[in-house]
Image 1 (cartoon, one colour):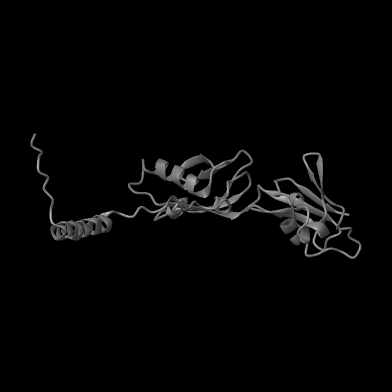
Image 2 (cartoon, one colour):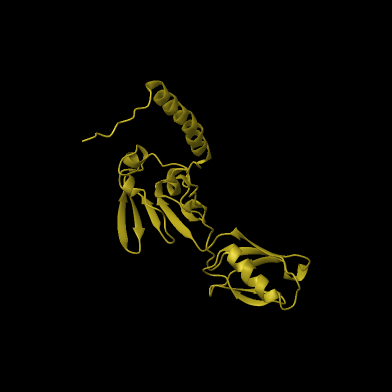
Length: 210
């Protein structure tokens, strides 16, 4: 019974084939690596948002505004918000200002003026804040009522008093808010302790320095 004869490639030929394949595959892999786009990590994405502190002031009763309508001097000038939250502009009528920001109010005025002016340009500025106030009483150099438009902490509010008198008990300061009494230890808070006492001042707050 005849056996099939096996054939073998010479070793030198095998080495030549392997080396040739390796040289051909290297440029292909290199090209694939260069062409592959690099994906930026999620942490590199720009998710920046405006800070809270940059939020616009919300208009309230008795605030004073300056309304400017381009090329319309009769409609331009200072306007005080009434106790009902309304303002009145000559030749434009009444607008509800309470609860709106200056940019929102300017948009509302602009929309109404479109019926009489082709391309009205309107801007509104808050020039005097009367709707948000706190009272500072007791052993400070400048007690009184102070308006505020931006977020204000108790520590910042106390600075309006221009310092304490020699008899002030700065450990026993308190804030009276709608009948609720909240303690404030100036010595501790100013040294980085009990930061939870340094709350944001609200309209109508009364701060007492005994």
